[in-house]
Image (cartoon, rainbow, N blue to C red; front, side, top):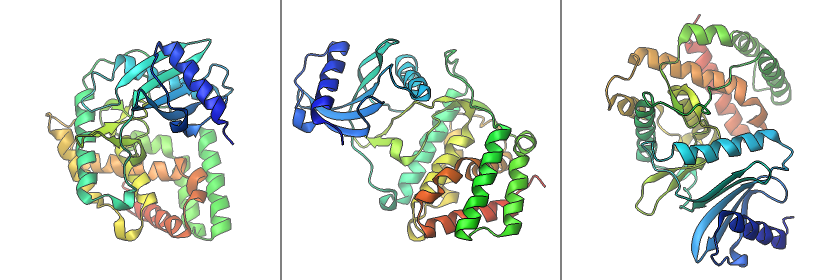
Length: 325
């Protein structure tokens, strides 16, 4: 249980570090994620204005959390004003190696659940994502922006093991399909090279509906830049689709073709998209399949049985349509 007194003390200590002297309403403090001695996202009001504090102490035992917090703070410091999308306004930041990372951001409205999204919402977001990727392809980026991490043999073996466990406990994956999945996972590096992914660009790295907010004028606000990196734009798009597909039911499933067409139009709006539409479609299909096979096994247990069945059916269709064979 989170201690309200501790969180109020943490908020006031952070504000002192940031040089803010405004009034905090203790009753309005809400921990949105994390808490206590670890990384935390805390919402509260400062002089009556809603704000969000992202706090990662240097004492945090998870080095990955600190790395991601530093990356996000650097994004707001070095890149936020250069990207062609709206991001949360920074009210204060501090990167003290001995005290940790603090980010104080203006708060924005949350999105409704994906089941309540309309088709035009998906198309609007996809078009904006395409324009973002096209614009950032030619931008000289700071040296701290790294490349997406390559797949390792150990990750492939672990994903294969988890799929076997999933098949055994749910009965949703037949033996022939499981063997095909294992063969595909073993050939990830080879298929990556054969398929191609298009030009590299700045990627959000964790692009899904939960990281999209709404400004008071209705504009999308892109939040949570902890995984920003250089990579193929199709990976952002396919991850957005995977998260939406897994979270919705058959009746509210977004139209994949409309989503992809909107992204492609956004990508081409500023000039040469950098690849043919056929090559783009192949790269996107492989990015989606690779994501399901490698990244999703740890999260399948959070899905309902109906959602699990839909994901398995989606993977089966992608395996059937694969063009690398």
